[in-house]
Image (cartoon, rainbow, N blue to C red; front, side, top):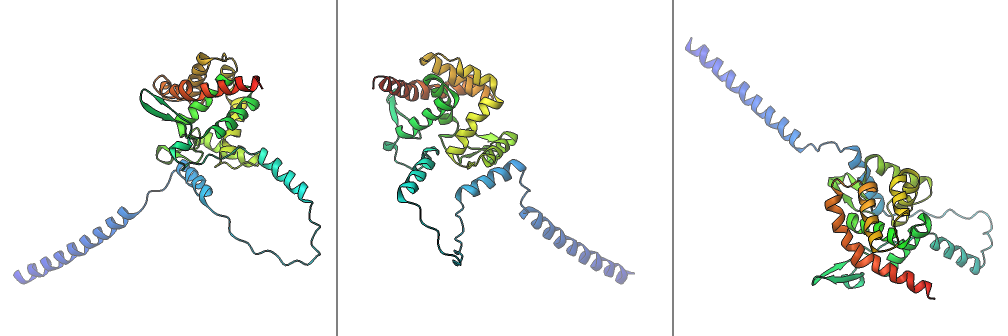
Length: 267
């Protein structure tokens, strides 16, 4: 009887040991398994990859027919200039602070993430495309500075938000679809700023009407900043978010654009 019990104990011990190793193996495999990404995370990851990938070099096909007559240099240059004029400049994200547009407020530096040339280009585009005055344009641009620092490739909120206005979900998909349908790149300033203008006119009539009605002065610029923050970007707490952006409006963007507007009138 003792010998039989001893045999059963050995079998039980072996069984428990085997089960222990099986459990350890299964747990280690589960722990190393990466969780499946959500659709918003996949979308922002895809856009980030598109922004950094380089086109593969392709081998030119052998010529079987006589080469076409080259276009005159003047026509080529004219076509190139027309294409460039139809594309907004891309902000350079890694440039020295001294190359940016900045000022000093309460003994502290306050700067935009773009320079004067880029600021003028984006302001002129919004003013022409949306028929906005200088104050309203200043409010929109102040929000872009506060939201993304004018970085069209910024990924935020743990991979759920992307771009100038940190679009997410259906709004992000709408931005990408619009750019693809209109021949624009969704990871660029050019594509996203053009989408923003179309989105305001077509889908966000209320904030667009508020921007159109802003008086062209500093108070109007502050009101435009709040309206865009609250009703287009739909900030969770615009009463706390907007004041941070209003500093960019009053100290940097509106004074510069108002002075530029006056200078152009006097030319």
